Image (tube, rainbow, N blue to C red; front, side, top):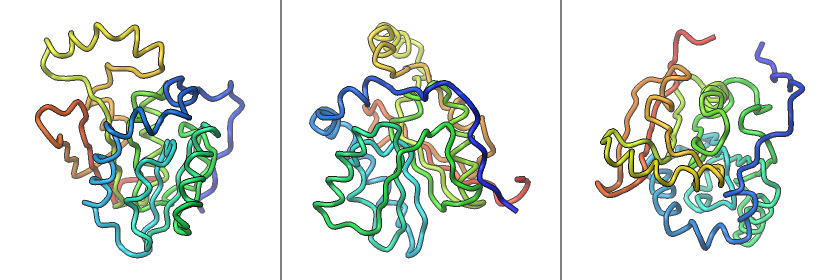
Length: 218
């Protein structure tokens, strides 16, 4: 029988400055870069009626408008400040298909195999342990369910990677790490049918869509 994982004694969860301290200004600063891509990705998947979806690191809810009303959507975030803004959006829109919870993405309290879709937008390079995040996302996803990640990934072109590294001290101080690779995303836990693409050749962000295997899982 599947059981909820026990929370282990640990230090206070990591909170990235870029998300926690800028919560009041997040929409204005980041919506032009993040919102359209995330919403288009959700809509492209055409979630079926009754689908259970989890968005990890939901933040202020930039993507929430894209989830169909016939889906059952849960959003989690470590920042109560972010969730306050997301709750206000839900109240204004009168959405009843979306619920929010404060939760550490690295130690989720959901049971194994709970969600049909698990999304993480611009989060994997922010948490202190990206491999653990990916394992948790796969754990709570149902066998055959979809794992969807949008993130900046380290360029395979050495000169571009070196150029981005010049800004490393700045981005690291904000809690955003620029050395995350595609392999860092797809290798920590078993995944099938992995697809990656960019919405344009100039885009800094990669979309990764994969499926949790239906067999060989505990």
